[in-house]
Image (cartoon, rainbow, N blue to C red; front, side, top):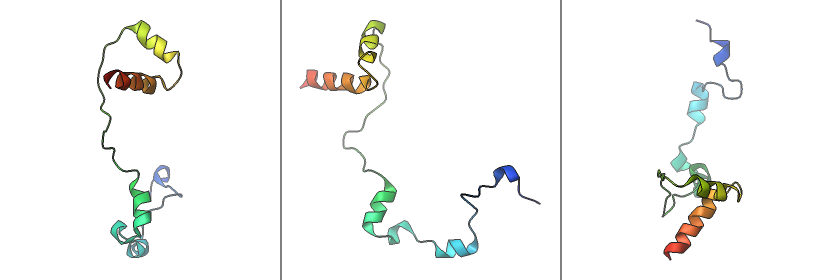
Length: 82
């Protein structure tokens, strides 16, 4: 059976037995490289998605402050509680 030309990815070809035999486990890499491949560490205070009903006029005023309006809203809420 011929491979589907739509499914062939020249930038990411299928691994051969030779490639598998040359592969290295993540645990066998230097620690600095392991950290980069794993990504950033988890937050000690992770964010949680919530549903909150607010007045449209309030949301529009925050949106008018720019793309980071959610972060600004969070900052104000944190300040109000401390």
